[in-house]
Length: 309
Picture 1 (cartoon, rainbow, N blue to C red):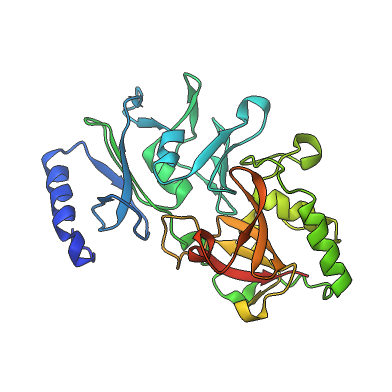
Picture 2 (picture 1 turned 90 degrees about the vertical axis):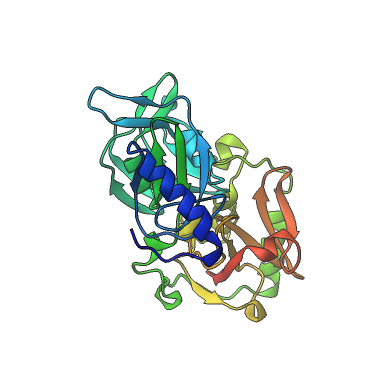
């Protein structure tokens, strides 16, 4: 197999290729992707690698792995609400993938797609075949049933290239400019929720008294007559792009998922600009909080800014 890869990765890639040739049980399901971390796939991309001891092979010879540790290997978290009729949700600070056991229909990066094999529930966990995992995450997945080694490459922006790759293709939602009074009200209203706990895949605030990043922005904007979609990736498709110098109170700020290249166009986190170089968002502990935009951690993973008011 001939691939293009960084020169510094050639040695590591050669070692992995030798291991694959030596063990014919190794398999890969591939699509275009960009590098992430700690091992090299046959296509030359870096990926998250771990060893899975709880896998199984069914009567048809299909290999199955638990979904949660596979997602965790590339820094994603998973919340399983399927026992109560909801979805299993996967993402970073915001939901990016949703699925049900025993259904091939899933939601992947805002699109409804069909998997080759429906995920199943076994011993209290959701299991998935590596080929279905590759389709779900829109990335490359490698597996070795003999050793239990699993390699998952970081998802790229491939799934975002149709219709939304062009910044000018965003759907207009601009209703009116915020007056100074309205801006003050928006900031004051958002700050009322400081300290409200963060919960990945949170249900409606009225029921859970919790937010994740996109449910928080949606709740705040609803107060001002704007009905944002539930997920950050879909919120990113509304309004119009603005530059840092144009940024105004009430603009949405989108961030990439850490561990992926900053050129990736799939937002994994969203917050609201509140002026003075700061934005309000929810993440981890203490939940809803105010952070600096131009320095520190978030300044290094910012994707772009969007105006919907």
